[in-house]
Structures are given as C-alpha cells and as structure tokens.
Image (cartoon, rainbow, N blue to C red):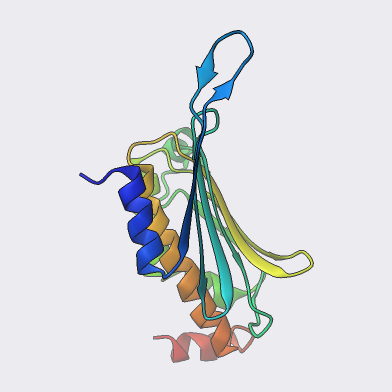
Length: 187
C-alpha cells in the first residue's frame, strides 16, 4: 500500500506537476501539539492552472481548484451533495444535486463517467463535495470536501478527470447551442 507522500508524488509525476509538502506540528501553548500536514500539487492542463490542496491534522479538508484559461467559454454550474439521512427519505440514485441554467451542461454532467464514479463513492462513503464553476474576476472550477471518510485519496483522480473533461467540453464551444442539437452531437 502506498504512503500518502508516494500517492501525491505519483499524481504530481503523472500530471507533470510539482508537489509541495508542509509538515509541521502546531503548538497550542499548553504543551499539546497537533500534526499539520499539507499536500499541495500544482500543474497545468491545456493552459488551465490546477491546484490540489489536502490538509490533515487540525483540519481535514481538500480543495481542488482550476483557474480556467481565457480561451474557454465556461458555463456556470454547481454540484452539491445531500446527506445520507436525507437520501433515505428521497431515495435518489445519486446524492449529487446538479444545478445550472444551461441544459447542455446538465446533460454533460449527468453522462460524465468521472462524475458517475464520484457519485458511486459518495453513495458508499461520507464524501460530500461542493463543486462550483463560476466567474469571480476569472473563471474557475473549485471543489471543496472534507477528508473524514475512508480512503479520501480515491476521489482526487476522478475530480481531476472531471475537470479535464469539462475543459475539453468548454473548448468545443458548443454548450450554448440548442439542447436537441447538443444531445445529437454527444450521443
């Protein structure tokens, strides 16, 4: 079984990126200390800047962000997660809630293999991501999630794949065409 450092080194190598590791205990002043380990990877895909940050110790949080290139035509969307408890009453196949005013982006997300894999993980684990594609000075896609579930490393590669799929889709510049034509092009 790979250590966390080996896992993150492998991702950095596969993506031709750079791994930054911050491993320092935090002192609380009363003699107690808490480990604080931050794994950070930066890499580029088609001129889009990826940053992966996973922090363990005092905070167990993950953030995967991508600053999108100005050459793309992104469409805003959001992927949220409903709790396991709420899903007991709703009985949905997926715990993900997809939101966008653009039907083509919703269709793309519903049929995306990487997102479907993440949905399977969310159905089995306590993985509750919030993914937002928005314009705030520049277009970006940001996924935030907690790491308090078994094997939290299993979501990193599918999130990267989802982002790459979205970049490839936004590059096509067809998300704003008629929904029927879009489905025909993507069937």
